[in-house]
Image 1 (cartoon, rainbow, N blue to C red):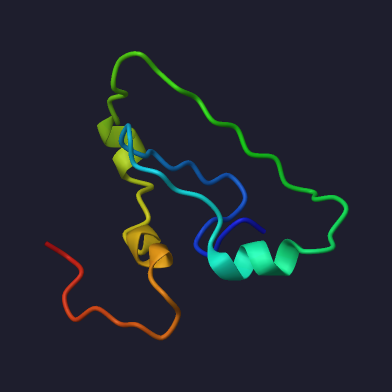
Image 2 (cartoon, helix red, strand yellow; image 1 turned 120 degrees about the vertical axis):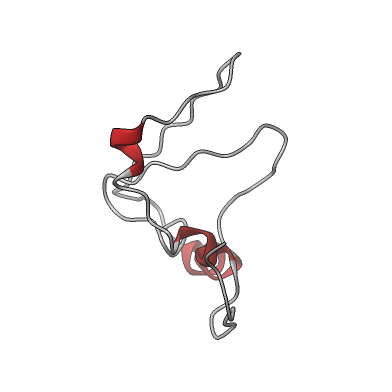
Length: 79
């Protein structure tokens, strides 16, 4: 519900100080809703987290594009 590009079991890591939140269309869709069936957990750490090689096998390369507006394409998203 909160955003495109996130599915059950997703885990995202955001650098400190980078604000983020629901996408505008998700916020608009929530108007008038009285409940949700999703749960989100946010963990603030004192030290940076390290992503293991095993975890990198599950990386979703398209996640960064979920922050763009629908219909906008990027020619070369892989660096």
